[in-house]
Length: 178
Image (cartoon, one colour):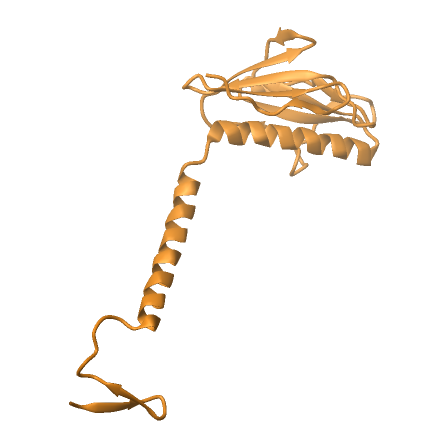
C-alpha cells in the first residue's frame, strides 16, 4: 500500500479509495445547476409572447404619456393606424405634431400580422393607414384622458384588450380571449 501526504499532516491512502469525494460531488452539482439556469433562461427568452409584448408596450407608453402630459403641462394625444400608433403634441400654432424625436413616445409599428379595433365612446373607429395617423385619444395636462378600448388580435385569433377610463386609469388588465 502506497501512502501519500496531502495538505499537511493528513494521510491519504490511495489503495482503498471508492466513490467520489464530497468536494467532487459539490462541483458536479454546481456545474449542473449553472447549466440548468442557463438552459432555463434561454428557454424563457425563446418562448416570449409577441401579442402580450405589444399590449404591454402600449399600456406602458400610455401611462408614460400621461405622466409626460402632467410634467410638461401640455396636452398630448394618441392616434392609431392600421399597423401601429403614434403620440402627438400641440405646437405653438395649436396644430398636432407627431412626437417623432421623442425616444420614448415616438411612433410604433408592430411586427407581425395583427388585427386591431379601437373603440371610442363605445363605437368602433375606422383606422387610417400609418401615413395618415391623426390624434384620436386626447390626454389632458391633468392626466385625464379620453376613454378608449383597444383590441389586438393575432393570427391564431388570440385577443388582448386594453381599456382606460376618463380619469386615465386602466379599467382592466389585458384579458386573453379564445
